[in-house]
Length: 298
Ligand SMILES: [Zn+2]
Ligand SMILES: [Zn+2]
Ligand SMILES: [Zn+2]
Image (tube, rainbow, N blue to C red):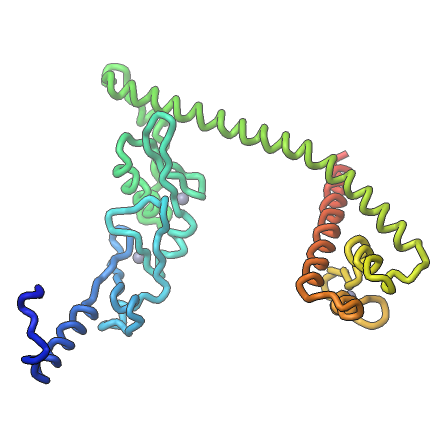
């Protein structure tokens, strides 16, 4: 409908208004069916009804349990939607589209599968669909592309197929080099962080010991109380399975609040103090785990 065919308000009858609303409803509620991305799956749902929050015209068009692929995904010809029957499979094999150093395209699946690289990204989606069907058990496993049976004999190679082989080699070399660099950077970070953390743990434990050996009442003064809360902790920190806070050998989980109340400390600062304590306790705990791991190895 364009503006010229609009009926002016003065001429509009009740019936025409009724028709207008009916047409609008029909447009708004026209089913827009989305298909499952798994080849051969016939399930579909009504995206329109789903968006409007209406029940679909047919129960089988319900959008319940359907999932949608996000950005960066490989998008098959059937679209981005996956039915509840196949959602688990697609989540487990949710491949990302990746461009290789040679400018070719591949798909990387969390399971370790990767598409043989292609010169056009559009060719990657069918390979992923094939992978999904293989995982589903609908297709026998694909042979590795380099196995002897599938190698191209020299006589059948062309300049182009040879160039493709070199491109693949280039990508493979870069991949393993990248993995080595990531591992090296991680090792370097680890070798710097561990001694720093162990040193901090020693200091924190010395502070804690110094405070707990001091007989003064650490709750009486506000600053003392804060130091105690961060370095020693006032709440029970027993994380043993089955531990239930009690009045005999633990401080429960309200002691920090009580201390805050005693000194008129605002809620957000009490919460902040709780975080500071958690970071200190966690750093000490992780450092202890690293030490325990190191002594296991020796
Ligand atoms: Zn499906
Ligand atoms: Zn996979
Ligand atoms: Zn407790």
